[in-house]
Structures are given as C-alpha cells and as structure tokens.
Length: 512
Ligand code: ATP
Image (tube, rainbow, N blue to C red; front, side, top):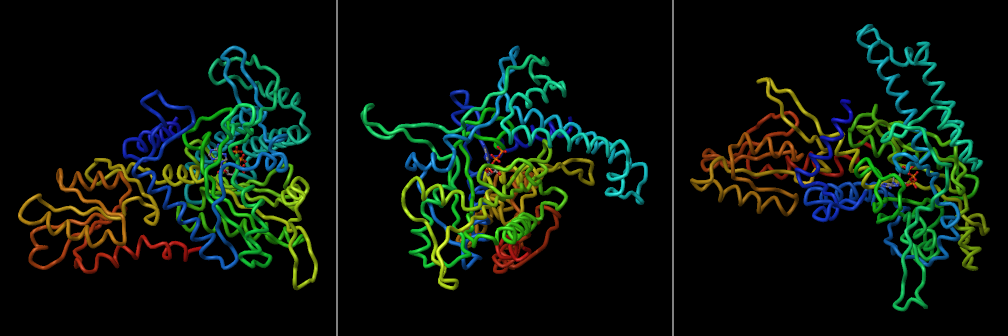
C-alpha cells in the first residue's frame, strides 16, 4: 500500500538523517521507546519552543511551570488513575498477540474510510473540474452507506466502553469478523481492563520504600500547584498554567513508531475559569489551538475535529484535533472541559482548600478547567511525515526534500565554499561564525555543490549559501531556497535579515 510505503520511508529517513533512533539499538532496542538524535533533538526543541511561545509568552494570563515527574502517590488515587486509567485489551489465542480492543474496532473503521476515499478519487477522475466533493460524499449511495456503518460502529463502541460493557465490545469484534492481523484467526479471549501506569519505588530499604508511579500525564503537576502559582503570581481568573514534560504509559499495543510510545512528552495547558463559562472557553480553545496548527502551513485538509462520544470520567465536553498521518486520521491533540473534577478531588484527598477568591464577585469557588493537551512526539511525527516528499525534477530525476516549516527546521542554513581552496573555506567559515549567533547553521565542503544541496534538502535545511570566487571580489554569495530551488545573488551583510524573514517565530505566529 502506498501509505504503508510512505510510512516506512518516514521511519528510515528519520534514522538516516539523524532524527530518531530506536532506544538502546545495540541491544536490539526497547519496544516503543525512542531516542532523538542530533537533528531530532533540534526539531523537537523547536516544536516545543513554538508551542511555549504561542501559549505562554504571547498570553499575559498564562504562566509556565516545570513540575517533577515523581508525585506523591495519593495524587493518582485522587485523579482517578489508580482506578480508571486503563485500556480494554484482548488477546488472540493463536498468535498470542495482545491488542487494544477499541483500536481493533477503530482500525476496522479506518478501512471503511479508505474505501470512501477510493470512491472519492474515482469520482474526482470521472467528473474532473466540475467535481464537488462535499456534495458527492453526502449524496452518493455507496459512500453514505459506508459512513453510516462507521458512525453506528463507533457509536456502539463508545456506548459499550462508557457502560464498561466489555462483553459487548467483544461481541462487536466478533460480529464485525475482525481477525488478528498476525494469525488471521478470530480466536479471541474476553476483553479485560489493563492499568497503564508504571510503578516504581522510592527509598533505600524494601520495608520502608514507598510505591510510586511515573506520571502518566503532566496535568496533575499543574493541579497540585494551582494555588501556589495563583497566589505567588497574583493571577486572576481566567488564567492558565502550562508545562511540557515527560509522561509514561505502559501502552498495550505500542506500534506506529513515535505515534504511541511508552515514554513520551506532553505539552499541556490548564485554563482555570469561572464555573458556567466552560462552553465559551471550550470553543475558544478549540479555535485557538486549530489556528496554531494551521499557522505552520501543513494543509487545512490534513486536520479535523473529532468530538468524543465517550467522555472521560472528569470531562463534560471533549474533542480531538486529528491529523492525517501516513496511516490515516488520528488524534494529535485533545481539548477537554475537565469541570472542577481534579481540584475537588485533590481538595478531598489532601484535606487542603483549593479555592479561588473572586474579588470582583466577592465569592470563593472551585474553578472549572479547560485543558489543551498535545503530544510533542506526535506533533514531531505529524510535522516530519507531512514534510517528507519525493519530487520529480525537470531532468527526470527525483529529489527527496524534507519541507519542514522553516521555523522548525533543525538547521536554518548550510554554508558551502564552492571549492575547498583559494581562500573560499575561510570566507565561508567567517559567515558561519557570524550567523551562528542567531541561527543553527552548518558548514560543508565535501562533494560537489549539487550533492551538498541534495543532502541539505533531505535534511530539511531551508537555505544553502555558496561562496565562490566572485565572493572574494564583491562580497556577494549565492543563496538557494530549499523548496523552490531558486538561487539569488545577495550581499553577505544581508544574509541575516533574509534568513530571519523566513525562520523567525513572529513571522509564523502572526498568521494565527
Ligand atoms: P490515545 O487515545 O491515542 O491513547 P489519549 O486520548 O489517551 O490518546 P490523552 O490522554 O488525551 O491521550 O493525551 C494527550 C495527548 O498526549 C494525545 O493527544 C497525544 O498527542 C499524546 N499521547 C498520549 N499517549 C501517547 C503515547 N503513548 N505516545 C505518544 N503520545 C501520546
């Protein structure tokens, strides 16, 4: 399948160009754990900075914190994770493979969705210019049938999960005749719940050691610090607390590369509001977060909202921002209206008041919370997979380009001397010295310039700058643009402004 091929290319490209490696690869790796290499660490940092800038720096009423990964174990009793943070799992008795029951059903629906896409593509070809996709999807009998089937399956799945009716989830898998992708058989066990938290111990002796969990989300670090931050920051409602950091989940099925990992990073923001205003803020954050995504220019058609049928125990509304990954539309970010559930629970379990005194209304209340939660690694995968393209060139050759949004690219410019002699390397290195105060830049002198261009294209570097003999005469260089391959002669002294105009965060975030 073309999409599967594309996904394989993404994974091998990420390795070949120093973006993502399997963790502990020399020991055959550790399942669903990955390391970010020299370029990956830069890209990840740039995504994190882009989020932080938009969420914290650009909002007068949002502050950022950095809470510890270890938290008092009662935190997880209060939050509901000890009792309810589990996934429904099912085993195939023949292959002995374990699956998430809900994911098996969702994957089945994705296959139906692929059929819809096929019908759309066929019709697009048939009708040409006059094709109206919306109309076709809502009127074509076959497509409408497919969509109704998907809707009814997902509705039943959502309802069964909500009622904890695991027998019905199994019945659904059997009725749909879903087979194990490995064994091909339908010999399933019953569906069971499995808690996803990793346990560990704090303390030296076995008798006194305390059982701890590695945090499965960063949000609780914000809730337990709510009052400290509000008081010391003298924050008035509505206000937000943001943080980025590692989270850990013992995922049942961890595949799809960095889409689902056992150790990953989240970027979360909890927005504290007056009870009763949650609908307004839910809409506000849905819109604001979507604008942030669109500002990166990765194609409006690659995003969609998916409102939840099954709400988590703490939520009164929830939606996902889904992105079109190489394996289809999947959750990238969650936006949840969490009510006062978390703060109330922590009040009860800690015995400490976590209320806010509203000076304007002269009353105390437990704030409601709107959460935006995005996986940094998933965002990395979205950006990276969307950027990787093979382009046909005029001479019939192809070039591999990583069209990363310039603001996120690990290396902003590569500087080459045309030849590694005649004083050209010295001038090129001087340009590197000047530019590296402002940008992450690279220097290369091996191979032909054409080859160096290709390597930087595949690495996602937006600009290549070449120093040649004319440079020695007139202080100009050739600057080449990664996407258009256009080349221009410019003055060395103008380089900084030219690069800045395209890689500056402001230039991108202004589009929000
Ligand atoms: P999923 O349904 O895919 O398991 P979730 O609904 O459990 O995700 P949340 O608890 O809402 O996810 O977490 C917020 C965000 O954290 C997700 O939108 C996703 O981007 C990211 N995330 C969650 N689990 C993982 C994971 N195992 N690996 C990488 N990112 C993850």
